Amino acid sequence: MANLTLKVDDQLLNKARRLALRRNTSINAIVREKLEEFVASDLRREATLKGIEAFFTRSRAQIGKKTWSRDELHER
Image (tube, rainbow, N blue to C red; front, top):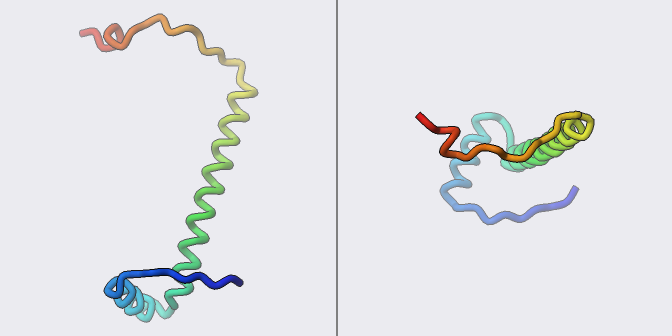
């Protein structure tokens, strides 16, 4: 595993240490977990976008020329 050096506000780090202690964990474990969540959410996002692109590629829907104006849509 690689090491990572961070600069964190002293008060924030102290609060995080107390919270980690109450949760019986470490700052290292918290940071690692949050980084894993961050990467996993991006991977899910990319997979979702690929799925949407694949759906539209297979779809037979066609987008026609715009025949309306914004004002027409909001006419009262």
